[in-house]
Every structure is written in C-alpha cells, then in structure tokens.
Image 1 (cartoon, one colour):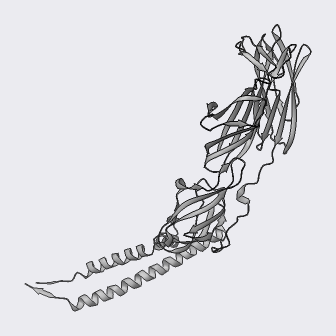
Image 2 (cartoon, rainbow, N blue to C red; image 1 turned 90 degrees about the horizontal axis):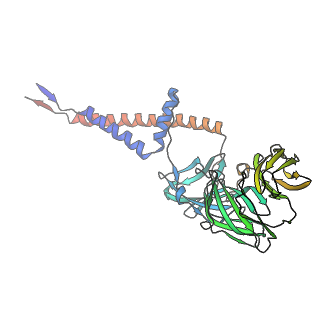
Image 3 (cartoon, rainbow, N blue to C red; image 1 turned 90 degrees about the vertical axis):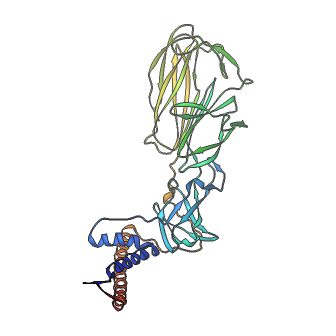
Amino acid sequence: MSLKKDNSLVIVSCIIILFVLSVIFLVPSIREDIITGLASIAGFNVSVSVIHVSFDINNREQLDPVIVNGTNITIKMPLTYYDNISMNLTTNKPAGFECGSDWYINESGSIKSVSVNGSAISWQADKSVKNTYLYFEVPPPTITSEVTYTGDSYYEKTIVIDSCCPLINVSANISVSTNYEDYILYLIENNTLINRTDEYHLQVSNGRAYFYDFNLSNNKTFRIQAAPNATLVERVVRRGGGGGGGGGSALPLLNYTPTQQFFVEPNHINIITSEPAPLDLSIKIYNLKGTEKTFNISFTTNFVYDMISSITIPHKDFVEVPVHIDTTGLKPGNYTDYVSVRSDGDEEKVIITLNLLETEVGVEGAEEKTPAKEQPRQIIGEEQKEGVIRGKKVKNTLRVVLLVISGLLLMAAIVFLHLGRRTKIVRY
C-alpha cells in the first residue's frame, strides 16, 4: 500500500483565505463594494454603512460669546478620520447642528471648503491626518415671544428664548421698566416657576435686566417679576379676604386715588411674538366698593376673540379673568385691542398691544460661504448620485472578482507545479 503525501487541497484553501482577507483589509472600500455590488447584481436590496468620519460633539468649542439676539457663533468641533486614503467624503451634518452655515475643515493648517446639499456635507478629505477639526457658524439664540404686564401693583415680563442647536454659557440683556424694584428671575418648566435669580446672576440697571450662564438646547421660558418702586408708590390699599383670594395683605399702588372704587391690573399688556398662534392671558379686577358688585366687560376684536361679559366680585376681593387672543391669520405688524370694565358708571380700561414680527427665513435656504481654498468635486443630484454609485459598485465588484479569480488561479498553478515536483511515495 502507498500513501501520497499531498496536502495540496489544504494548502490552496489556506492561500485563498489569506489572499481574500489581505485584499479586504488592505483595501477598505472593497468591504462595501463586495457586499453591495454583489447584492446589486443579484437584485437584492442590501446596503452597508462604512464609517469614514466621526464628530466629537461633546468636546466642541464655542469660539464666540453667545448673546441672545447677538451675532453668529463659530463652533470648532473635533473629528476623526478612519483609514488612510484621500477621498471625496460625504456625510451628514453633526446631529443637532443642522442649522449651521459657513462650513470648512482645517486639516492641520490645510483649509478645506465644504459643500452643502440639504443635510449632507462634502469635502476632499486627507484621511492620513486622522484627527482634525470642523468649523461652522450657528445663528444666535433669539427671543421669539415677549409678554409684558404693566400694573399698578406689580410688573411681569415673560420671555421665550429659542436656539436651533445646543449652546452653553448663554447671556441675555432684556429691557425692563424702571418704575419697579426687587426683580426676580424665574425659569418656567412644566408650568412651574423656578427661582433662578442667583444661579443666573440677574442684575438690573438703567432699564436693562442682564442674566447669564444658562444653557439652551431648543427653547426656554423665563419670567421677570418686580414690585413697585417704594419711592414712586402713591397709595397702599388693604384688601379683605374672599373667594377671589384677597387675603387682607397690603397692596402698593402706583396710580391709585382715594375715590377709586375698583381697579384692573395690568393697565397695559404688550405682546411681541414671531409665531402666530392662540395665546391665553388674564386680567385681575379688584373690588374696592362697599358691597359685592357685578362688573360688565367688553372688548375690541382685532386679536382678542373671547372673554366673559360679566362677573360678580365680593367686597375687597379680586377675580382673575381670562383673556383669549389669537394671532393666527394676521399679517406682521402692530395691533391694539382694548378691554373695558364697568360698574355703577365707573370704568377702567386695559390696553393690549401686539407686535407681530415677520417670520425669518430659515438658514437652510441661505447661500453657503466657503473659503476659497481647495474645492471638492462637484456634488450631483441625489437620484443621479445613487445611479452613479450603483454603477460604480457593480463595476468595482466585477473588477475585484476578476482580480481575485486571476490571483487564485495563478497561485493555484504555482502551488500545484511546486508540489508536483516534490511528491514522495511512501511504501510499507
């Protein structure tokens, strides 16, 4: 009996495996081409995602101070390349910063301009740099809504501050009335007032309220409240108890006369908004008459659309009356409505002013500014790009398959010839 000492099948198999693995790992793009290209040839809807770059959002830097209604802020964001090839790279904008503009890449001093196509950004990447930075600008936070209540016994301004992306260390400078004192800053969350006077360093001077060191990710609502300035208060009225919540406390008033039988607060409501929508306000009617009285309410209807027509209030008590407004359908501009409260021939009026701002055009449609350095290749349309990519994948796959088959055949021939010369016969 003889045994041929020929392990050619095992050797060839090992060589094939080593060759394929070497090709795949030495040429990273082949991983994607093999899977998606073969799937395209076979008619399967298969795709694979290869990570070429990642953004380190948590370690971004704000290179400019963030001021509400200020100027654009430049963001510096670390990024990491994968593999070592140079390529025209396309990826999505960093999550949460889609409103950015003026994008560019700094690869160790080499400035690369960035093209924008919807939510995608593209540039010619030199991946040998590995770790580099993406720079772009974002718009400043803006005040989208202000509602100011000016009353004889209190002052209140509610502000909605909106940001299109996450920002830290934000500061705001808001106008306030000078007829009041003891200003308090509240953050409103889930209809709850949270005192942030000290945490956000509220300072009021010369009709301006300044606070800072707060963060934004979308929008936040703040409220500034104050009491009448003690040097300006003309009268102090004591209120009795009752169903409306009088409580008997002293009520300082700026514009009260001893003969006044009732008063309404606030005297003036000023609304500034860029978002047409329904809004619920309120007024308070204080009854200083000697007995329980009924008060009749009327209003104009430029944007106020509903209020109760009458209400009965006990002696030395007050009731809060809702005022429903709706700015939907109104064109940008200034509007005024009046609320009149009457009882026994006496009348008090509340002026409600509305400044409806023109909605700003989104930044996505704005022209992108790019440094005039190194321009990436032209970005084509999505459908055309998909067709080109699909065609390239098929071609690349065929090339890879032909290359692999040719290499395997050549190596197999060499192995068989080599083993054939060294074949030994063992007899026993």
